[in-house]
Amino acid sequence: MKYRKDKYGNDLSILGYGCMRFPKNHGKIDMEIAEKLLCRAVEQGINYYDTAYIYPGSEAALGEILEKNGIRKQVYIATKLPHYLIRSIDGMEKLFREELKRLRTDYVDYYLMHMLNDVATWERLKAMGIEAWIAQKKASGEIRQIGFSYHGNSETFCNLVDAYD
Image (cartoon, rainbow, N blue to C red; front, top):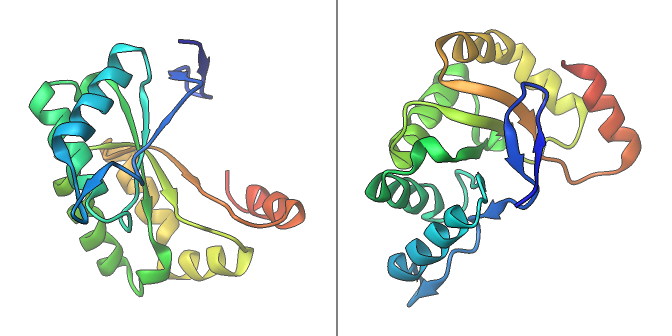
């Protein structure tokens, strides 16, 4: 496996594992198959695992598999804050606690604002106090790195990148 360093010096596999579409059986994640696939990916050197609050069952399945196999420390977890469901810092905190519980961990390596597609949304989050919340989570070690996922055009992307370090 090839790796690239992030800006903090972590070696991330250039191939990440997206957990949005774990295999299913009768509408539920097939844990036996998901576990085999995920463990094989770890064996092959993949160390970046991407999930999100809104991917049904994904965070819980990932957490269960990592815990069961004792491999949490070998991987980097990226999960996402669904800002479109958040109306207050208290709501953000409650949702974040739920994510940690689902993932069976006390920290997230990469916490992304999910589908942050415009500066106006970032400004709304800032007005709620997200910058202080992020700073507190980073200081406590509960969030190691912060970022966002994006589904828009290049110009808006550049504006978002300039809006926060």
